[in-house]
Amino acid sequence: PALLCLTPPLGTMLRSVLAVLGLVACANAYVAPGAFAPLATPRMGAVSRRPAMALRTSSAVSSVATLRAPIAKSDFVGTTFRVSTEAELDQALNTVKMALKDGQKPVIIGLAADSGCGKSTFMRRVTACFGGEVKLNDIGRETNTLISDMTTVICLDDYHSNDRAGRKVSGLTALNPKENNFDLMYEQVKAIKEGKPISKPIYNHVNGTLDENEEIQPTPIVIFEGLHPFYDDRVNDLMDFRIYVDITPEVKFNWKVQRDVEERGWTVDAVKEQIEQRKPDFDAYIDPQKKKADAIIEVLPTELEKDNKKQLKVNYVQVKGVENFEPSTLFDAG
Image (cartoon, rainbow, N blue to C red; front, top):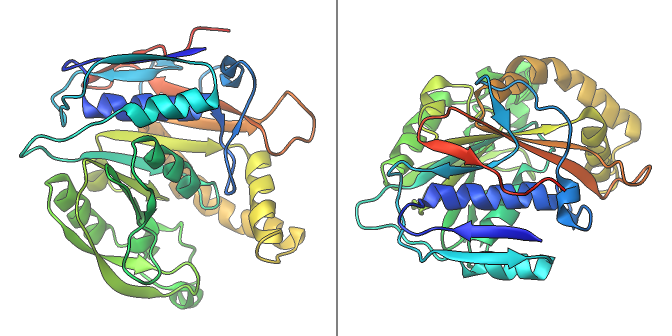
């Protein structure tokens, strides 16, 4: 069984965000892009015993944060839930209700990962935890923005400088910072953090075009997910919390095959070729952002069953010494 404890005024909205992130990361296998599945019974089996990787501070623990700063304080009632099944966890999380006071600003979370690593799937699950229907922004056309009662998830692919045809001309991948408009990204993340609406571009993943802008109203929690949320220092400094999803090469390859071969008609050789072509840019521009993360969700092959690609092992590692929060253990060892 796992114990989910939400405390009154000491707790903040960001504390609740991190509690949910910890539960999602540790209690479920992170599988892309299709679905989530329980890793083991009991759930503590999902917590890796591997040594923590190097982070941006000297000490790291597998934990969920307790935040004490006055960042978007909420007035939800303190409640303790003891859960032992998926249904009980869902019911407990759906009970959590939060509301910003007048004049309060959104909590800004950044999520960085390589493309094809299930960022959007993970964010859809996290967003659902805070209640309300999770849906694409209702603009009547293609969009990447997820909306719920409490949360907005903005895809940073929308800040690509060129469309797909333009990148063929430049010869650069979308992982290269030159193919991204960091000035606009900074201006709009700053506006959202100040509680202001924005009119942002849309990158159409279906046909590779840059489409007409969409209007976004800030919600209590706004998550910016993509390739470069921490690359530009101006944008990075606006984040209240930073998460890096670290996918091992074996898992990444399996996921790419699942998506590109099974869903898009690629060959396995074509998947391998693309991964190798993108690897230099990944190593140069994406992976170094891990050093700026407050938490890392590491996804590894399961050790429970050979060749099992649906169930995975997840290691959730969070740093100590980050201003405004102190880590606390989510699960006992077991």
